[in-house]
Amino acid sequence: MRIQAWGTFIALAVTIGVSGCSSQTIKSSQQDETDELLFGATKKTSVAKNTGNKSRQVAQTSRQNGRNNTAAYAGFTGSTLGGGASGMPQMSSHELMMIADRIFKNESGSDPDKLVHWNDGENFASMGLGHFTWYPAGRQARFGNTFPDLLGHLQSNGVPLPVWVQQARYQGAPWNSKAELMHAKQSGQVQELQNLLYQTRLLQAAYIVERARRAMPKLVDAAPRQSRATVGQNLNAIANTPGGWYALVDYVNFKGEGLNTSGGYNGQNWGLLQVLENMQPSQPGQQALNAFADSASRVLERRVRNSPPARNEARWLAGWSNRINTYRYPGV
Image 1 (cartoon, rainbow, N blue to C red):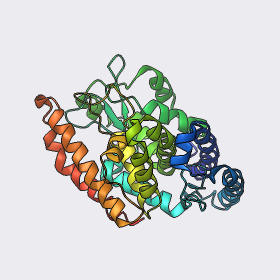
Image 2 (cartoon, rainbow, N blue to C red):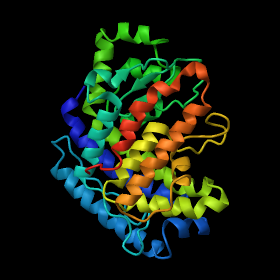
Image 3 (cartoon, one colour):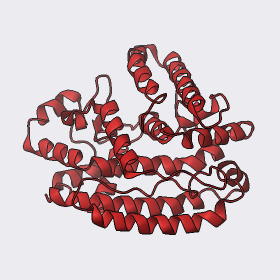
């Protein structure tokens, strides 16, 4: 594997990811009501100019940084969420790296050995920076099967995957239990995958950010009509607060978008949509971060109350609370 080349792949992939997801986001938010809630009346005139300028800037910076494991990130301009006429603040390469480091710490304790993992009490493997779910073949993907999509993203951006990983991507995780995975971790194959996932952390972070970006217009569309203004206001408040994108991106990676109407327990989901819905209406600033964290805590406490007693989900609340509290003072 050409590990040394991945810095270039990462920079190029982030550039491609930004331009690609910007267009997808615009196309998915054509409804007038959603546009007004997310972008305001000045969206259309600023998008094309901002996107073109930022793409050229990223391409130039990517060439300069190609030999390093860093990447310029075009960020969230008016093409994704509006902060009035000025649009979204751009996300710097430093902020992207900080988000990658935070997610790595949140999910794996910054331990490379846990990039290929299986949590106690779960029936799927947890892979990579975001602990993407990977179910064995034939097993119902209760919480979604996200690792195969990440593998496709890595491969499409020039990262060579081991042959056995390419095959397993379509067949399912090659381990049926935590015990099987722990035994397999002594093999050279799993060590090779673990090293690949460690070397591509920034590319994985860009993928996580892109997933969050794509979800934004859908969140307002999916909200009950009486809640759409609140969801749009709170989304903009968080997104326009320094460090707010860390909270949004990490929570989507942590508990999902909350767009599945049949998901959750007792008909109540626990994704980002539900957090924004149950959040006190806020303006950008520290208050918005606190309100977001408070709402996330309430939503996850409700999940535990609704969960089957046999799962004993209360044992996870302390760890979830610690993670949510990082949203109050993200430092990014």
